[in-house]
Length: 188
Image 1 (spheres, rainbow, N blue to C red):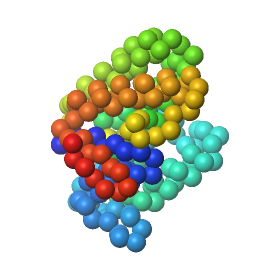
Image 2: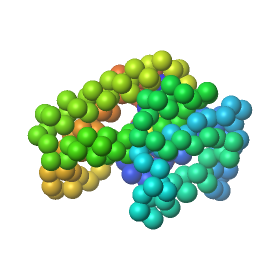
Image 3: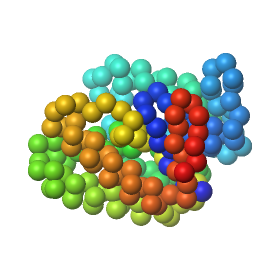
Image 4: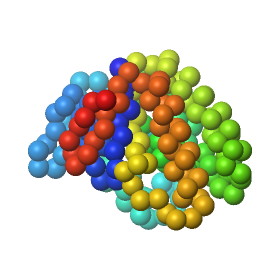
């Protein structure tokens, strides 16, 4: 099953995604997932934390690692399509907003006309969806752009529009979409 999990920042969407692939077992006190029966590949889109000069990002990556089973394999790469093709078992991709940021950075699109940026991102999204559709064991996490504050400047609006389009396209490739609000899950 291919599932897209969406919600606002700190909504519990990542915790829900981990539980989906860890068999639903979790420590009630910490929210850490159980060991699960099948090893999972966790894909963190974007550049590896140790390649960035960003202690906040490294701290976030460490936090997420601590809250998923130790048997899971972690891949940090902006090339999610390749990670999907190469993963031997179920895959959790967290999060598409990070993948989009890495894609826009890689292509140098922050100052490009919106239509040009959209076309370039759409090409990469098509590659991502082709890899996604070849699998039946993927959970993807994304931010719901209607549930967050968008910075009042051009790059914020471009990101919002690109992420909204990306979410809609990826949702079409998935069997289910789960909206998480305040830790509660609504299957759409």
